[in-house]
Image 1: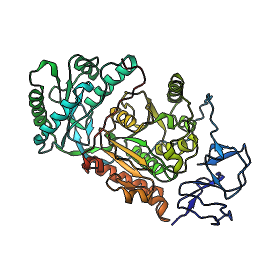
Image 2: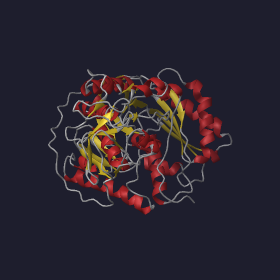
Image 3: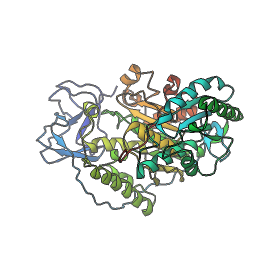
Length: 492
């Protein structure tokens, strides 16, 4: 078993893959001067105060004190190197286009040409006031599940009224995006009748739609809204049962990439595994979406250099700068340190986390950049504007068109999203401890001397194809489904 790793030959720190005791000797002769926890960094040489700390072959911070070889490198002796403003220059990376060899999965082909990996009915409230009603409808409608209809799911959120400007528009767009999602064979949009983002607004944002697939109701217009809703759900269930799984090209598969609750191994095991998966999917003609913009800060130039052209580079610059402006407009520090859980796991600075986070994007060219609420148009790797919050970002990925989300974690979480969310642990201990949460163990990459990144990436790809073809993930087995919308401004 590997006990530590030096990620790049240019690094001046190593990372412990298991807890290491004082006196342990690395292969280069460096002797540990103190105990080092799993995921934490070890100085490989003497580093003077003010000198760069290099990990992943990139700058992750500046030493705040002299550090001797073999000492622990963490928040007590490293600070961020980032400032408020950056000038970005497009230096196009030399990346070959993939040779496309399409694969397939067993999914549901919809009338608009999109493909679903689930055949569900979704009940979507336009406003938080009807959350209890849609929950009751879901419970009462469960007996309708049979044949190819896999589930009936209601989603709750607190918005749709008392919002202003961009927030209100975002709510309308996200709800309309979800109403158009191919994982839903049928959709019931439930409004109250007096809200800002009511049924008519959602219908307007949805555009042309199949009336067999999407139905609307306004609760204030019906004496017994539950009975009326159940009648509509019965009609939707009959329509949904006309669909059957069939062989569909992976060019129609879109997968969202997200991480949360990282540890010191996330950027070494789980995120690179997802990155390799992404490259394999794109080589099969598919699409991946990377989001959580604040966790690109400090590694954004790496993504910018992978832009397919200067137009996409400019869109990536705007993606980053617009989010910085959002932070500034709310009086927040742009380069805030990672969360307590991240620090406990060995992540010292935002650059440390960001350089690990962008590993999820693999090595492919960036084909397009999406605003919050926009849907994928270009195949290949896309970037999406959304915050780091797990539920908000995952909902944004689903709204952008992702039928499945890959979620890496070093800490563990039970959360779900509107679509199947595959949880990937960065370490084996978490996988063994929380098998009711975790679907895939990327810790194998650091546990085994024989496991290669190519092998584990292909293993994850195979699981995604199985999931797209009907295999349930842990959160689905538990009945978990979550939705969250990005809120930026005033609530009336």
